[in-house]
Image (cartoon, rainbow, N blue to C red; front, top):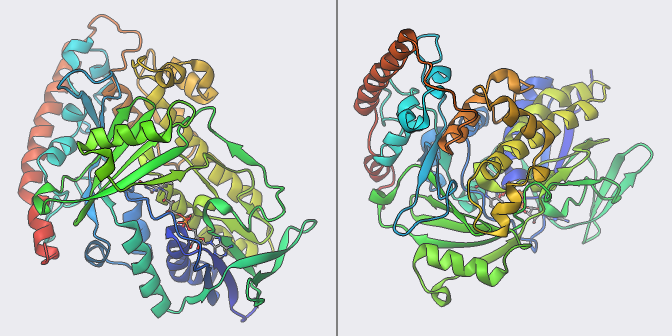
Length: 513
Ligand code: FAD
């Protein structure tokens, strides 16, 4: 074992670069037992994407692993709480004056003791089922009430609701930069112009910046965004394109002021459009809105028109940014002594907020596998396999939202309904779910973003019928559903007692509001 510090260079100063610097500077010395020196290089003239505002609950553990307290994060990053996602107009095209919706909450469906009543419930005829999120969870009701998932003070029922955050991406990267520079991460401004890469060993020996400075390290992390400047420096790393399954490839975004803390709603709204969907996220001081669409089906101008119509403003008054999105992932996520994280590793449309999640998962896996690499092993293939599984798990789940929609109003929706565009794994699962509910055994691994509970909420939220059977409820299962209703009512009572409205929390922690 050497006493020399292990040197890492991260290239890229977006969310992926700074979150990796934060996480690895805290976790890698612990997992490897070695001193770690981290430098982060970023080009001053290549902007970050600056979007990425909705997250999933894993971020709470990731922030804790970086040593960041929740209150510090909330106050520094304009962040708000997120109970889940409200999907509007996904099942049917919008009818006049009505937007049908369903909710995908973060917490798992409620059980009765150890017994899961979902199978019994799924046997009910559709008109007797009611809305899954309202029956198996209190979360959508709390979200609609503008209730935070917690109190400012510790309470017994803190933790009854799983939750994530909405955050200001610019403030988040800046917060991490200030904090972790002060804790020893070296910050270098410069553009990587050359990568000294040996194709036979797959080892990077040095980076040359555009001013001629040469930088060397034991390990390199590519966080250069869609450029993927290091992981694909030899142009030999195939990109696994997923646009044949997930059609959206562009976004037009805007920002609006909020109307005080009373408008903080605690969920992401995703409203389906003619060839994509619009996200609507309320932060402490502004609303972030973006239309994600497929350039194959509508033009940029049409996308902007739909965005303006959603907001209810004239197009001319709307300041927007248009972004291209490369949908898919690098075939090799870790080559030699370089790993790609963030957009450099890949990207899938942000419908279920998985961008930052993938950065988190890459870091958790690295903290585990880099110590092996340091001691002479080659975990590259194992790491890549784990990350590819994350990507494919997300692809299936995203496609589910389109595949089971009853919308046939535009070519985009009709093509999405064509099983030829569905992954084989999703096709097989949908077949199995014609007669039964999604089960954990349908999903291969223990670490993945989406498993049975997520599928249950989306599948039945979208009105999935499967092969409806006549009402086969026995007295026993009826009793189970009655007990479920009692449990839910009791939980609601406790949660209402032990949480505060968002407006109260954010007025208290951000005095400027
Ligand atoms: P970038 O932000 O692009 O940063 C790249 C960095 O690399 C920059 O600092 C740049 O200067 C530097 N760089 C590039 N080339 C060089 C070079 N040669 N030398 C030196 N430096 C270089 N994620 C979520 O979790 N939730 C969401 O709701 C969400 N919504 C999204 C919506 C859209 C439309 C898009 C496109 C993405 C969204 N994401 C979302 C993903 C999220 O934005 C990204 O995961 C996140 O911002 C990380 O970006 P990044 O740091 O990898 O890349």
